[in-house]
Image (cartoon, rainbow, N blue to C red; front, side, top):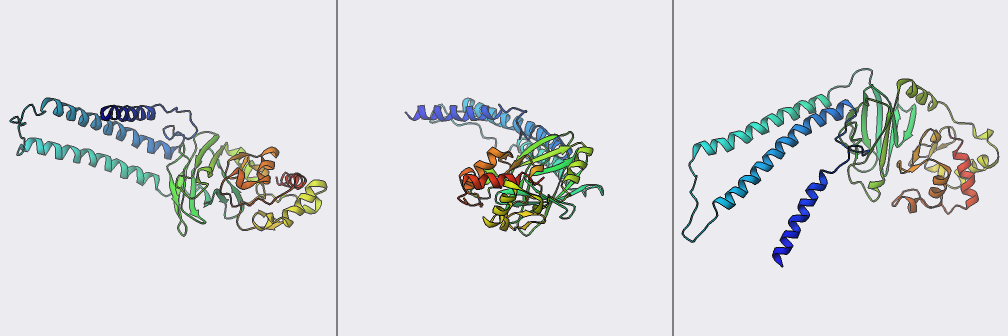
Length: 336
């Protein structure tokens, strides 16, 4: 029975090792598919270290098997030949690992120095703030404030100042860069750069509470002209609430009476302190920590019961009626 359990455990372990080699490079968060200089530098470091470590792993295990088979004890009087005092062997297994570790160490320090080099003067500067459980992005001081989707121009270095509003988070878009922690009371730095337009997915990589797994992020890389259009659209003021009519006007009223305005900023209308800035909500493709596509159906689901859609959500269930939800959605659709 014990032998069967041992074989089962060994087989399970072997399958687990094989499964780790079955990754698909097309997966959106594949760290082995770099699409930017920083990620490529890390990949160039990881690959040779992996193959060296793999070769050593195989060599050590082969030697163990050979030693177990060849030098096993065959009788009570049988004893293997001792190699204590063999200077050549002892020098060999001391110097070889030291040389390997020195080479890896030098390569690692070089990569760290390159990644942490001072960004160029024309780098786009963005302040990224981690919240439970969403990301806030502030461009050009506080000229543009958005959430969950970091928009960047292709081919330009983006210098990120990384902070946290509550607990430790970790910002990680794996195809563009390594992970860097966001720590309360401290500012860390990182740079990202995208080779080509597209959406690069990522998420918080530090357990930060009940809904940590739902703290997703997107880096949207634009051609420079498209980025300038996005930037300009997010610098405009939203429509004046006094010009709204019908359900949108009623929804704007509900936004205040139901307490939404105490959490969310809408420039020129509300000055909330805790939730994502909604001034240009309709410029985004997602909401609620990038969990949901931004459309009326998902907004309705969300407004019915935020904690039910995102466990641990700090936005409470406001017990809204379907009519109130319709009006609030009409108002949110004006935030362009």
